Image 1 (cartoon, helix red, strand yellow):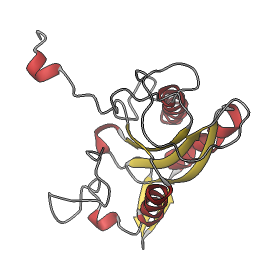
Image 2: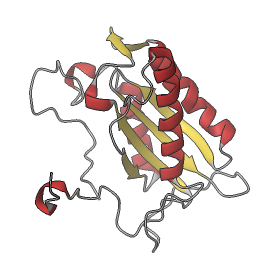
Image 3: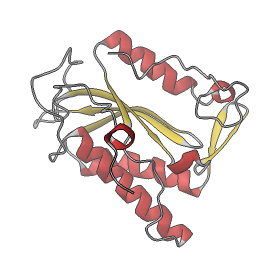
Length: 193
C-alpha cells in the first residue's frame, strides 16, 4: 500500500514541547490489542484478574524496583486496559511536588523518560504473557499509550479517585464492549490541555 499522509499520518497525542523525561506525575492508560478482554473480568464492581492480569500487576510493581527514577502511585488493571499514575523522580529518588506546566524540550524516549519506562513495561508484560500462551511475537498491547501530565494536586486527587472507581464504573466504561451506549463518556478527557 502506498503511503497516504491523509490516512497514515497519526496526530501526536503528546503535549507539544513537554519534557517527558522531566520530574513529575503522569497519568497513563494502555489498552489491550484490539481491546480484547485479556486480563480478567469485573464481578460486582471488582476486578478478578486472570493469569495475564496478574502478570500486568506483578510487572507494574516491579517497575519501581528495577527503575530508580520511578515511583508508583494508584493503578488498576482492567479487563482490557490499564490505568496508573507514575512519578518520575530526580536522581536522588525524592518525589518532587506536582509540576506545573511544560518545559521547552521535545518528547523523548531517552533512558529514564516516560516513554522508556512504558516501553520496558509493555515489552516484559508481552514477553511473559506470550510465553504462557505459547504465542511468540503476538501483540498484547495496542501501539502507544495515552498519557496526561498531572498539573496540580486537585487533578492528581481526581485521577486517583477515577482509578479507584474504575472497576465499579465498568458498566459505563468507554472501553467496555458491553456498555449500553456507543457514546460512552468518562470523567476525564484526553483532549484536555
